[in-house]
Image: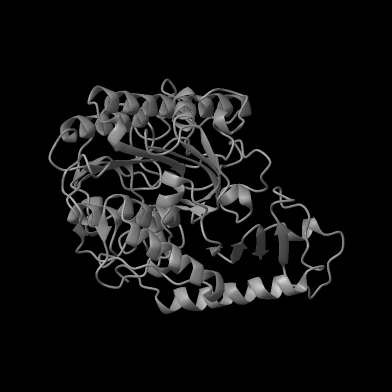
Length: 471
């Protein structure tokens, strides 16, 4: 742990309380306190795709059990107020990779696989962005990724161009779990920058590659960073025994609700089993105590998911679109069985892991995320800050328990009466209305004005720093 770094993070967060936000800084060229694995933890991030807030039994799901993720929570810290940066896939992944709002690098929408959209070959994570794997690799880590990338389709955007030593998986938004054909009809399973078809259910392949990486890198002179980006439980809804829906032998996708729910359960179950196999691999290599495992979802669940009491689903800025399950485990360092209600977000992981890895910052580089290191290791509360979301025309801002949402679909359904010229703005105290059903906008105009002012300032800031990839 670096006390000076932690002090800097908390000082900046304190300033943010008054000045909206003041970004952290990072440089691609990093110094480290030590190069020995014993003093620097291995880091594994496991990302679910479209998982609902209550899809895990440790988050209240009574429809089925997820014993391995439940074990992860029992042995670590469970977040009840963790958020994805985006309401859909690509934006959250961009923010996680860079520690910055995704709007800064121009990825504020899904990067589509369809060539007809005219963006398949042009959009992706810009090469001038400093990513988490780049920073960790520069500081001495071995880096590997398996699973879903979704931050650019062409070789210039490949994970190996953004700091990963190795990559096994797919680059599109989703593939058939069996044939690995994407939604535009392209074969999409890669080893680094080369197409590399593999037979097997994608969840199983992703887990197998994760275990191979652990076995190859455990006990070496360098610690490792492993990013395990699952496809489950994203569409297409296919359990291990369901037929393909794209490519050879394809059949019609499941349509009956009961069959979709059955396949969804199986998809979550297989991913949960994979988590258990990863934990077993760590135990076999005797590196459990020196490995951080962090699990979260890239956005809220679809209508097939269990979002519990939350309103909305993936694609919306209601809580159901971006409040997600998140669990951190580091035996002996993170208190077992801890639960935190502190508000955190996906872009916080980059500064968190850089601090825990002993990375120092030398040159200015805006990071919007805040380190969670002290929260994880000492349960130190985070300084209050303001967080922002934007997707299409919808926007949201959160400070403390207060949330303002603008231009959200079905907003007018909250009110019984709505004037023709009334702006589509609603205000909620999430402490009292987690389901966002009690709109206080008309009774607290000063709070609405304050949050809107902060939102407008944020929009101006990210627009000023906005960069695009190859456009």
